[in-house]
Length: 257
Picture 1 (cartoon, rainbow, N blue to C red):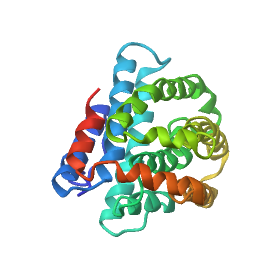
Picture 2 (picture 1 turned 180 degrees about the vertical axis):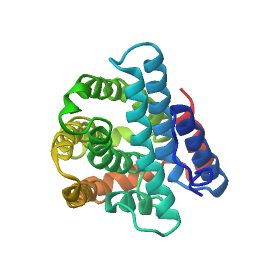
Picture 3 (picture 1 turned 60 degrees about the vertical axis):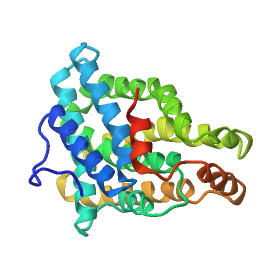
Picture 4 (picture 1 turned 135 degrees about the vertical axis):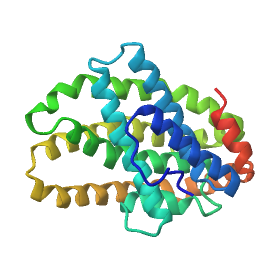
């Protein structure tokens, strides 16, 4: 159900988009909530493709390599999870949550964002620009951060179509929805760049251990998203009760600009 074509890694942004389309279509067919993050990720990837063509980034070709390497980490993790092969612990938390009823749409999206930004983004950046070449990508790395921040309002509008009671979170846990989103798109970006700086400077024999450490941090950060405190959890259940259970309907609402 992963959507991978012949288990081949993507080599272009267009190939990433095609594989994400496969995941979304299979999610629709299988009524799987795995498709929720994939729809959001497709919107971000399409925006990156558009902005590369528009000249937003200092080095468009390098940005495409980063985007593809970054995406392949998610695609590989999903394929491994469905094949019951070992994969990152933070991704296992995100994927396992899609099989349960209680998490609401916002939680599914944030669990995916947590794993992909807090673990995968720094690894991908260090792979594209290893060693002392990493500073070359810092400007474009920051531009990706700004692009994600620009998309927040659009994501919130898409969520509002599906979660009519999302406003309830504004009255609980000090605006719990914005606090969670703010974590994922501010603190997580700093974590990702710090991870890239560290990984780019490490010898190959130390990379695996450091990536395992990052995975542990991202997994720990996933827990309060998946299982928040009692007050917020009660509000989440109320919000979730008003969300549709029809996966195809949710996918359509998320995909519509």
